[in-house]
Length: 80
Image (cartoon, rainbow, N blue to C red; front, side, top):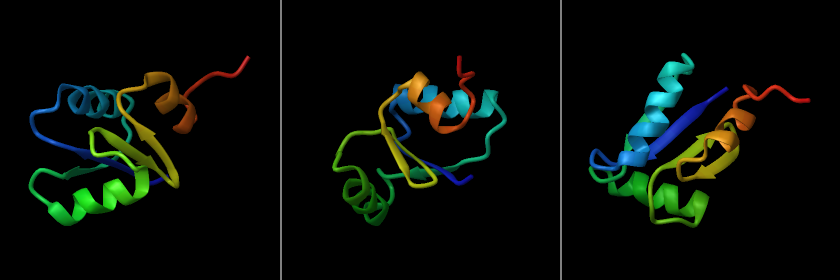
């Protein structure tokens, strides 16, 4: 599973996402779109969004801090 977090250093929701992934021991690539304009363009192309965080899990895109969607995309949610 490949996880990429498009974020900025000052975004509180980005921190929530990254803390959640660390807590679940999930490796991820953190991409600072404030420092990397080409990564920001890539993020907008993939998500249609200018805001962060944008989380890419394999080919799934999750916009914003959405714990339930993250758990589901990461296979952490117990079905039933």
